[in-house]
Amino acid sequence: MPERRPHAPVVLVVDDTPENLELMFGLLQDDYRVLVANSGERALRLAEGEHPPDLILLDIMMPDMDGYEVCRRLKAGTRTRDIPVIFLTAKSEIEDETHGLALGAVDYLTKPISPPIVLARVRTHLTLKAAADFLRDKSDYLGAEVARRIREIQDLQSVVVLAMASLGETRDNETGNHLRRTQHYVRALALQLRTHPRFAALLTVENIDMLYQSAPTHDIGKVGIPDAILLKPGKLDRDEFEIMKTHTTLGFEAIVRAEHSLGHSMPFLRFAKEITLSHQEKWDGSGYPQGLAGEAIPVSARLMALADVYDALISRRVYKPAFTHEEARDIIVAGRGRHFDPDVVDAFIALESEFRTIAQRFADPH
Image (cartoon, rainbow, N blue to C red; front, side, top):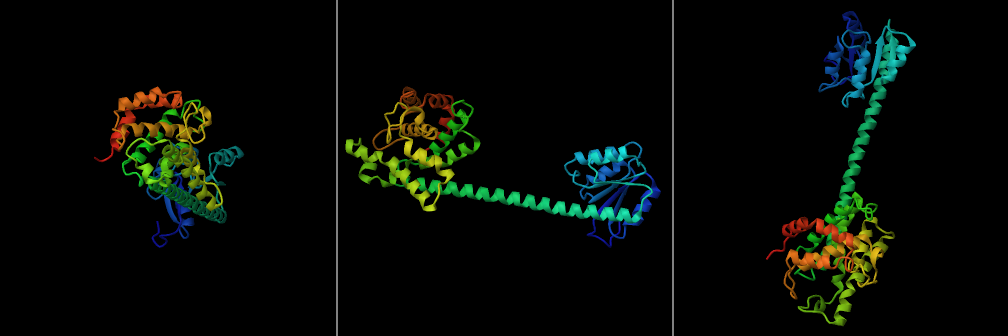
């Protein structure tokens, strides 16, 4: 291999006849770096090595492994399938050429060779390979860049949603890690129900991810509730409760206004709007703010309703002590078909141990 052309394309010549190897080496050495192999096995080792050739000139009639089998193996290998192969052979029948091209060769030349034709074909296919490599590298780069930008956008969405949600939580410092826990409860319920006939169409991988991101927004409307009501250390009276109920519509309207300022709706906020407005609705229609019942309640809000109630029950508040998991479970089971979607309750029962784990993992500091 001449050292005077370190950046020249590498051509591998495969032939079991020394005279043919010498002839091709002499023909190609002025323009290319030339590797030679006198068997199919050696050709495959060179092609699969650390520095594969840019093009292969391949004889067909060789002992042990013929050129057809070498080509077949090259095209089956992930590292070698894009190396252009030119058959260079004494087999001149149309069937032979057809078979060789069908195996993936880019060209088929018969012996005795015409040096100008060989050089022209080699040059042409190396030019085509260089263009294909450039496009492939460009495509890989663009694919990686798109994936990176998508991750950035998703991270930005998560940060924006969490920041919005945290505004509401700052008004009530007793809620601690409530956002984190309910986020994980909702995802666990969604994963449990993703194969259920009633939920499978909605609970795709993408939608479950958006549900997880959107769950923390459920109480952002609390930022608009007066401290005297939000932080009252006791039961709210009727008028106070009516004001507290408006946190659902306040949060929903805040998200809608944000979308309007952009001039269009944001798909990733779809579940945030549903959860914020409807997570206090009840399966039997006795909830608020719209009195929705049954299937009219968005699935996202049904999941959030159970997650929110469970976490409120097991958490200490100024107006109540923390309930045990068993007590919270019994209350939720009692609300099956009244407060909660029955199938969501069944999913919760199946996930009891996971809910416990989430509650312990994100327990509030004491």
